[in-house]
Image (cartoon, rainbow, N blue to C red):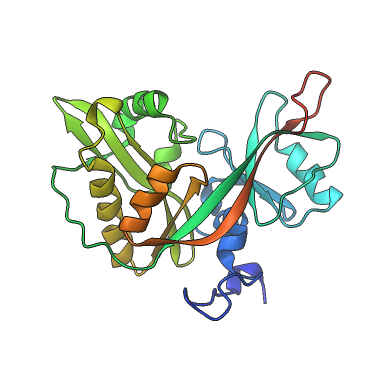
Length: 251
């Protein structure tokens, strides 16, 4: 059976951390599946097109796979991997940063109801979206990230003060990402409004919402727990670059 033909066990099954669970290989599964139109690479390594997202994956941890990954990595670029186990790449790749990430999935549709007007965002809103990302640092958001799915936001006096959207997509699952609220609008429930709206939209497609959050970001984790998400498993983030004499050393 090929990777594209496999099906995941239902959430809550007796073995939710099974090695063949699609979300264990979330970037790879997205890039060979519903996001393959914005992928580049070969059967050993794939990445999102650079203006879309900095995420990449390899089929395994062999030197050959990392060599294929290297071919996708310009000298001045960076790529990020999510893996179940912490990786140690070959010497021709440097690890610039490592991080602990919680992968969460929706277990119960939230009872939360939106309390503010929400607007759909499109390509014309990208400059405002990038300005909000620069002010809040929710994670990677490039000039073409919006092509990955639905993005919604809240505007106040014409200014975008909050947004959230869809990023990685694979069979049966859609990731919620870019959840951010401008400091001037925090504490008003806007993140909950946006996430709960996206959850309902994804559920209408009979897909399971999931997301990634740094394990140290307790306020965000508490919000997602209140909205019906549960921890599926911890993941490892590795930010990679081509090795060079002036590259940041592995930590």
